Image 1: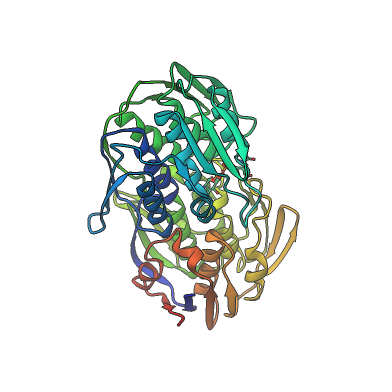
Image 2 (image 1 turned 135 degrees about the horizontal axis):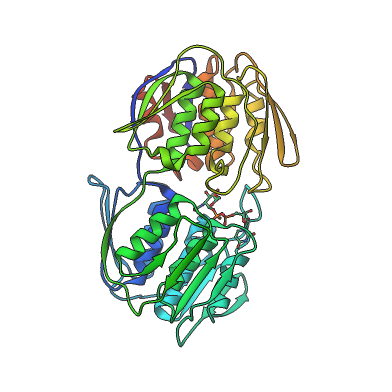
Length: 422
Ligand code: UD1
């Protein structure tokens, strides 16, 4: 297993290109199953997760052409060859579950493994399944598999989610576009990835209104055509590098980043004493001297502070000039990075879903272990500011969501390298 070694202390200076969003790309890839014509996705991130989705789609009969140099992925689901997504594939990546809705909508049946829990929480899919049932699908769970059928097609429905779920909102959209009649999603998630998916589906001929608000209306159509769509810039990648610059100090332009998708983070950085400027080419982040100021925050559905940036913000606050409080409201087990950050000398007390971070003047490098995708990058961020060497083990988690992480940071002056294990 590879490791990443970082020698801390160097400020970051230069520019970092922001790639397409993983969390958007995975759902856009699933959308290709809805049309017999090709879907061309531009700005496609080349990550373990997106490669994995490509493999799954290929096993369902989708013809794939991925031109990595131009970051263009062409998906052509002329025929659906299989409607089964096996345990081994869904277990490795939860977003694989998202093929269920498109298969059900296009073919009328699908058998997809239940994803199971993951390191950050139980993560059930009950809201997804209730949405399909409301659209008239028969759903049975047998031996860990969801068997779904709507042989005469799905019917539009009014679906009021009891709480906000990004995945359930997207999945319901992916099915409702080909249902008979109108669907209304109430208490829908408002993440930029939802808007991106709606834009792509509309380019394919769907009729979706209200994406980005808490009520989404979908008028079902009988078929979808091909389209070309550019994957939205990754706001979590953007936020991660912004927090890295804030923590290590320096001056970096995040090229292609969108300030309008990161208002909660920009407010937090401002309160912490970090300068953020929106420029025509992206977002510029600057911190030259002076300690980070402590900030209290809680994670919330968009437009609140994203749970996917909580670990990285905690890493920054470990060396703040005072005490910060963090409340995690989305996932029940998302402070696993705290004991690893403590190995670098951070002072963090976790009580249930609250963490109190008492800033120390300087972290000291140490070997640490990555536990999940966002947690692992928080350890890299902490390592950039720590004295001496930090070695992050189990970096395969990082490879799921960050493309060229070491190269992008090294180009800005970080002392960081990947060590291959024999
Ligand atoms: C997506 C993102 C993930 C991000 C999360 C919240 C992808 C691939 N992943 O995950 O990076 O952290 O949004 O912004 O896009 N829940 C249920 N039942 C359901 C569905 C969800 O109880 O049927 C719960 C979850 O366990 C969680 C909460 O609802 O506690 C929110 O989860 P959700 O918004 O659905 O997250 P994901 O779509 O899984």
